[in-house]
Amino acid sequence: MSEKDDLFKLENQLCFAVYSTNLSFNQLYRQLLKPLGLTYSQYLVMLVLWEKNNQIVSEIGHQLFLETSTLTPMLKRLEVLGCIKRVKSEHDERQVIVSLTQKGRNLRSLAKDIPRQVHCETEQSIQSLLELKQKLNTLRDKLNH
Image 1 (cartoon, rainbow, N blue to C red):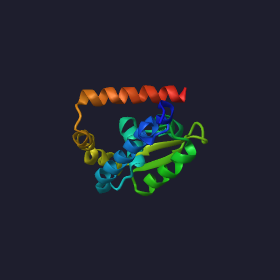
Image 2: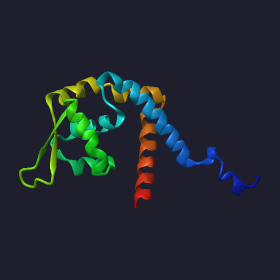
Image 3: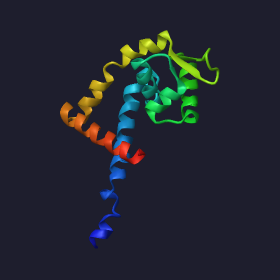
Image 4: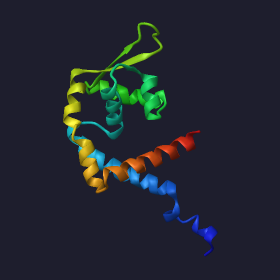
């Protein structure tokens, strides 16, 4: 088998390493988020709102690299769960402002230990994880350019 053929081996694909790692992360987060009643993608939305409340849908989508059409059903579900409320902007009714409810704010304290639990599961130093995160962010930005 030639070196060229090795490029087509699944084990040599960076995309598969990222994909399979993502599956493992999703499995871990599924366990950690079950007591909160959130999915991983809903958790990401909550992280965005815990950082800055009262954002328009497009701002949230921009931060999560999601289209409005993908984000809207997730927001509707979070609203049904009582975590957020959505209201049309008074200045531009085409825009919807997403805000945390009291339940949504309270979830933050219930979720506060999740980053530490994830860190423990990785068995990596904070420094190595930060370096890996930076490399992945750089790679993502290059691919999105």
